[in-house]
Amino acid sequence: MGPSGESEREACSLRRLRCPECGETYRDRWRCRCGAPLDFADPPTPEGAAPDPESFDARGGLWAFADLLAVGDDPRNRVTLGEGMTPLVGADRGRESGGDAEPDLLPWNASFKLEYVFPTGSFKDRGATATLTRARELGVERVVEDSSGNAGAAIATYAARAGIAAEIYVPADVKESKLRAIRRAGAEPVRIEGSRGDVTDACVAALGEGGSGAGEGTDPSRTDAWYASHAWNPAFFEGTATVAYEIALQRGFEAPDAVVTPLGHGTLCLGAYRGFRRLERAGWIDSVPRLYGAQAAGVAPIVRALHGPEAADPEGTVNDAADGIQIAEPVRDREIREAIGATGGDALAVTEAAATRELDRLHAAGFYTEPTCAVAPAALRTLRERGEIGPDEDVVVPLTGSGLKG
Image (cartoon, rainbow, N blue to C red):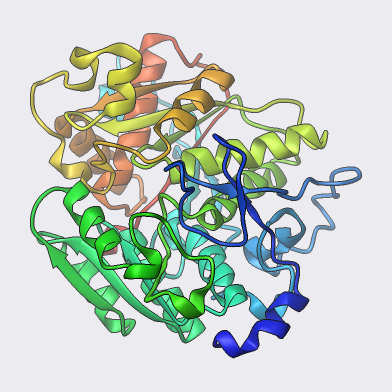
């Protein structure tokens, strides 16, 4: 759908965006004029009693929760590959372990949410389906995104599904498996030398006059491209909020005591927080679980802010195995810290050695994941050892990316 479809687009309920800092509202824009990230002005709130999990129709995947999403009111605009409702399974095998057992044999005593079974092999499909749906609602014809790999592959794939052109800015040393996924979806990968921040800067510069650093984007017909950013775009967080809806449904609307996620830009952590908060406000769950974020040692700004430089860089080296979360300046840094604080959670840095050990344990237990997502179960192990998560507390850990990504 091009810009000429304005009347059809306006026929659907297109929600406005609001700046949480200055209060200004927009029809569409990738960031506020004051520089802050935007959110939806009127996100939906669940009404009535929680549905009966036994009779809930989950055949629509995450779009089964369409009434709780700020995008996709008109089903014709939904850009979907049947994503969502990923399995929630016990992490441990039936074997008893403990006592004098070696650490490698100790159980996680948790449930794993298998986010790596999504169409593109990562949880980023949650955000991509919602973001490209918003793009279609707006009549966007070309999107740009910057990513270390997974988000780029997801945006490229869902853009292909929507018939929207895409350019994905990636680090020059991106893994070939992720680069291949972007190319095969028909998107144009743009490799940028330098830091992850340099990749973002190059992407923003490429937005064109209408979508430049000032954050324009009020009329897609006058912009060179639309910024489908997993860090800035509020539609992406609408998609990742569905992880909370699914966990709640799969547990009979009883929230776990804690959720442990990898933490880079915070797309899954913040999405889960927003989703659980909505369910709590509606009375569908009794409380929001404590949220714990696992960052890559050496690139752990949230840990640094909460606990100082030594905690953020415990061995003086960077956890290069967790390349997917090496974000030095998260766009929503303050929101992440507020979510962690509000739930009584925490953030900790995971070394490469710890992540590598945990990846071996995951694979040996039948969970074929990529290295980055091993930081979350590694963090859970540390949190239990410290007593911050009790031995009998109920924990969910999303496993975020497939081992097929190399």
